[in-house]
Image (spheres, rainbow, N blue to C red):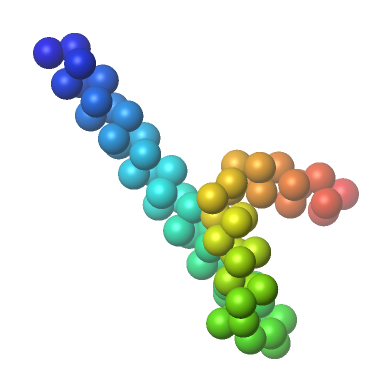
Length: 67
């Protein structure tokens, strides 16, 4: 029983991480669109996906760069 509960907790955590990553990708692509860039360009997509995969680091970097 404990294994099943642990599995569900990890699955929920993975889903939350994936949803946050998708939101971060959308945020990056929207920033590109608002800046007048082509959000469908391969370089913009690559940066957005990379930032989405590592969104916790991206949040910290944004705070440090804003200073």
